[in-house]
Amino acid sequence: MLSTIAAAALPILVVTLALGGVAKLATVGRDTSPGALARLGPAVLMPERFARSAMIACSLVEFVLATGLLVVDHPVARWLPGVFFALATYVLWDLRRRRPDAGCGCFGDVSDAPVGLRSIGRAAALTVMAALVGADGVTGLPRVTVETAPWIGGGLALLLACSPEIDGVVSRLRRRVPCEQRPMPPARALSRLRGSAEWRAHAGSLLADEPSDMWRELCWRFFVFPARGDAEVVFAVDLGGRRPAVRAVVVGADGRIAGSDDHGDASLRESTPVSA
Amino acid sequence: MPYRAGERRRKLAAAVLGRDPGPAPRSPEETEPFDVVSGDILDVSPHLIILETADGEQRRLVIAPWATAWRGGAVAPADLPAGARVVVRALRGGTVAERIWADITRITGVIREVGGRRDLTVELDCGPHRRERSIVVPYRSSGRIRVRHPKLEPGYLFDAIGLLDQGTSFAHLPATSQPPYRAAAVPPPSVAYGGGDAAGVSGSAVWADLADLPDLPDLPDLAGLAEGGITEGVAYPMLEREDTGCDDAGVSCAGLPYLALGSLLRVRNVCDGRANTLPIVACGCLAGRFCDRCLECGTSPRGRIVELAACSYVALGGDLTKGCFNARVGLG
Image 1 (cartoon, one colour):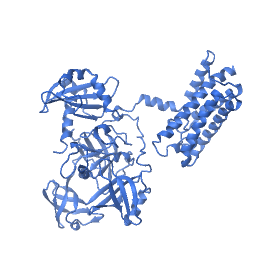
Image 2: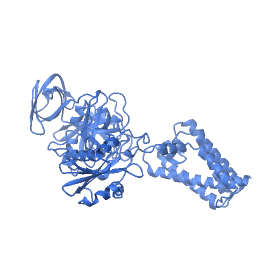
Image 3: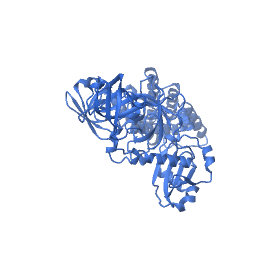
Image 4: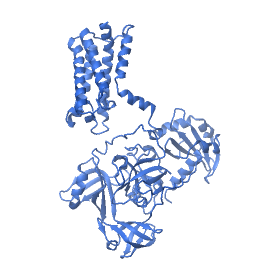
């Protein structure tokens, strides 16, 4: 049974190590918030000028360990992840004691929540898995079989339950960046407009393919096209949601509305709060 | 006519969304803005100041007995020199001068080069739509400036209030504490997932020399190319780059919503309740890079939300030598 658990732990370890390495490198590459690296994981314990190199070194070690587990058939390659995770558990424990404000940085800046028992528990669980892999001598490409699949599922569930990052991901999914703060290139809104029924309804009267003016306010992008009879057709494209609402109106040279789309002016007034 | 294109945009947007194109009415807790007169001094006596405004009109204002004036420091209003460019906060329909700021300038930019040993010369990049400036930090002010700007090094932000004297800008007072990060590394908004509150965003409102803008290329007719520059309006950081040609726009650490040149903003001075509806007339590329807080009355949430033209700032009760007021901004 132990060998089954070890065989199930191998893919989990490889994926965790690779993910951790990629996330750390991405964090170093982004470098948006100065000093942020010095608030993450083992880099906290070093002077700020070494924070970047410590992060890169840590991610490289993780890549080497993951590769070692996959391709090197030697006891050292199997035991090293165990040593790494045991060390990580100790470092996290120490970090929690010395810098209770610092994040573990296990997955780069995603893991910016202060180190808690869950992070330490996850590192400990990974240490146990790595020790099993080392003791059992599993190596090579992981194979998912009927016996190992439930163990893989169980191991993943354990790790996810111990991951404080999940809370952040869930809150991001539940409360997305509001559409008025989301950047959206005008070209995308224009292509949305050109696929809409309002565009087809007014396309015949337009004098130009490109808008004479366009601007964005909150979740709406406005396009103005010159039209026949010295009028202008104004389109408003909603930038939120997958099936954006498009509205159109023809405005005469005198600024009066010559004709609106089928919603009618009164219903528009009701459905659109005065905000933008 | 200034802001004509902005007005046109507002009308068209109102037409297509079926809303009222005019500004929202003032709410009961908001008070009227001050009257502001700006121009060059033609003559000044202890009781009367005569100005020539940007339109060439002469304005005569009685100087109130309690009036104060600033020109590099507190001075008596009668000591202001003829020819000085002043911003006057006025009472009684703009006929009584109460506060006068003369030759005041706001020096905000990214440090490009620092030279000199006693008097420091600082080359600043003031954003793509404002000119590069060379300013002088006189020796007598350098201690004050350096305390709040410890990193006078290329790449860091600089923000001071100074005096424009014979074409040279002298930094006198630090307008804020220098951000510890480089201008290119602005921290992301801390409450990115806080949900969109279109009714209002709080933060710090600052002022800027928007009057310099029309000398510069490519802000289109929206910027209001009046002869005397922009005297009313705001510069806003969160504009779409493609629409505005502001390559540095769209950066803010206050979690602001996207708006356009020409959009109306209702700016309220939280400290004294004065509010006004002002159009966005420029890119606030640099304002978005400051994550400071205003401490005029309580502590504002971090981040600069608008840069007001000097006259608009004074009208809302701001003191030009203080550099900021706590503000709440909603859509007009």
